[in-house]
Amino acid sequence: MNPTLVQFYPDASKALIALTEALLVSVAARTRKPFYLALSGGETARQLFDVWRTRYSDPARWKNVLFFWVDERCVPPDSEESNYYWAHRLFFKPVGIPAEHIFRIHGEEPPAQEAERYARLIADRLPNREGLPRFDCTLLGIGEDEHVASIFDHSLLQSDDLYAVSQHPATGQYRVTQTGEVILASREILIALVGNRKKELLHRLTARPDGVVTPATYILAHTSRATIFSEIGLFNRELSF
Image 1 (spheres, rainbow, N blue to C red):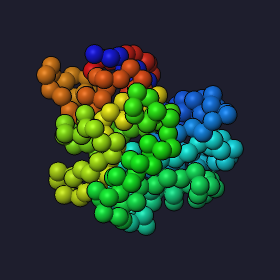
Image 2 (cartoon, helix red, strand yellow):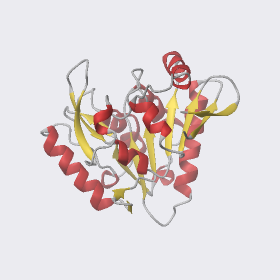
Image 3 (cartoon, rainbow, N blue to C red):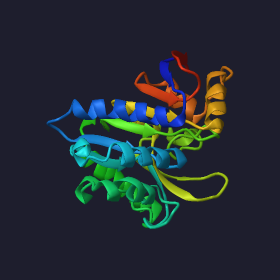
Image 4 (tube, rainbow, N blue to C red):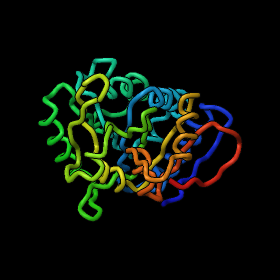
């Protein structure tokens, strides 16, 4: 069992600002090398990109950052379902992030083919740690069903593939996703859990009965480098998963 630091803030905005400050401290510490950042999607990511656009819009803050994705829906980049679409609309374009710093998953391509292409890209670009490409930071979300990335069951948590195809259990939509071992290889994992439904999720995660493993609890139990930023109360404590 690994301790996961959960930092609590008065509201969602302050939690997202605190996450961003932690990220930028790590970015600033790597001034001579690219900083490899993996982005997630979803409603929380949109809120985070809005914070970045409004409070951290100086391109100099991001000049050493290379942006990759944890996962992507298999849709075109101009679809409102696309994770890339919202990152581009809310952050990349208004802040002026150079196109050569952005490495999107091509959701419009055949899923299996794109998972292989993106895995090769990651393997070629990123530094290697014990046979796995290593991101400097992974921004991870946790769904209300306790999925992480687009990992909805146990099959991709210990996969030999770097990226793989998954299918949403309710909608049937195909996605390209990072697998569990790549997530765990990241130097740092930052997680935002904000909003009333995510508060309930955090309570559920920390009260999980022994023996019940979900993608979220698996990741949290196998890393000591994760920090959760939430908005419950005004104190910090460690929780074991």
